[in-house]
Length: 312
Image: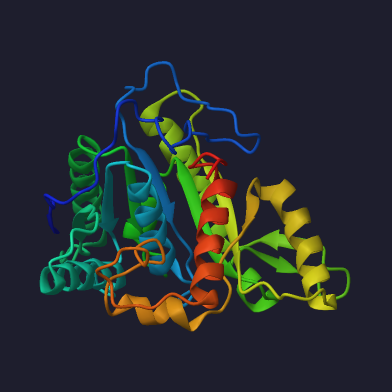
């Protein structure tokens, strides 16, 4: 079951889909476009934000990625597959309410949410969810350059279905071995990878599902976003660097520097704002050095992922 609206304030793109600050789509570790020759040119680029561990910052990441793309003139749609938790749903509702109360015209994405099917039969529920997601993704993609999907922080069918639509998968990960466990089991002495986690195995399976559904060799670019990185070099950080480097080569992802632990990310949620909105004179948030540093982190992330051009 899906819920949502296409907002008339949704940002629009100027000219070609890679015009302005929007870069060409990339989908392999080297940045090369592996678009299949049969793929329609007007297909939205799907960004999935996924991690099966709660508290990793998925919804904050999804909203800031969407806002960054809208700020560059792209048409953006969002899909919340974690509708039971509903953080992205509330984030966008807060944004709409804040804009209406202050008569602001901040860019707004088209938005829908899909809830878990209510069928008692697991097979029937998954079939219903698969069909619903396919319908919603197709509908949102028709009028968007980018579709950002927020997925549940658990292993369920909606999470797996959502991951299978990715052109770019972003996995926010707090920079600790507690959180790295979602990707692999690490030897405590050597920091070598013992074996990939269930989540990593799931990502591999949905890559194969995507290839079967879309044909050709299309999979997706997987970016592990390292949040809460320490400012100073430490033994733990060096060990994390080593383990992630070894794991990246084994299960095919690349890393990008994410967001620091900043209170501002949590404060902005209630207003539905992102760090890209604070330059608007209608917002009542006074910019300080912490805001500027956090906004630069968002811009750096988008450049590292490869979704905006490096020029300011």
